[in-house]
Image (cartoon, rainbow, N blue to C red; front, side):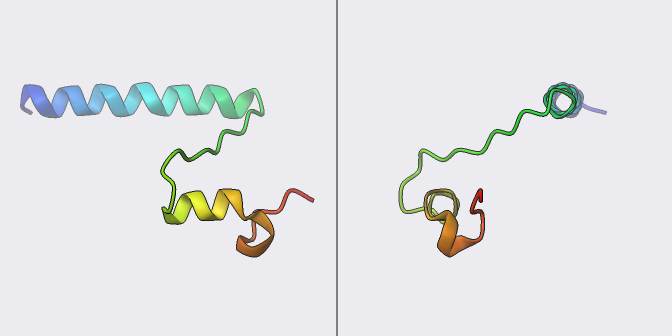
Length: 54
């Protein structure tokens, strides 16, 4: 395994652990700063796009 591959693996493990911790704390994070992107439209038009927090 190259040094780059080891670094990617460590990065994956770090973020997996961080996400698991957030899930245990019941924290939900969904945001988008990229206007006109598909994700931005879904987040900022929840009723039309199906993410409505009723």
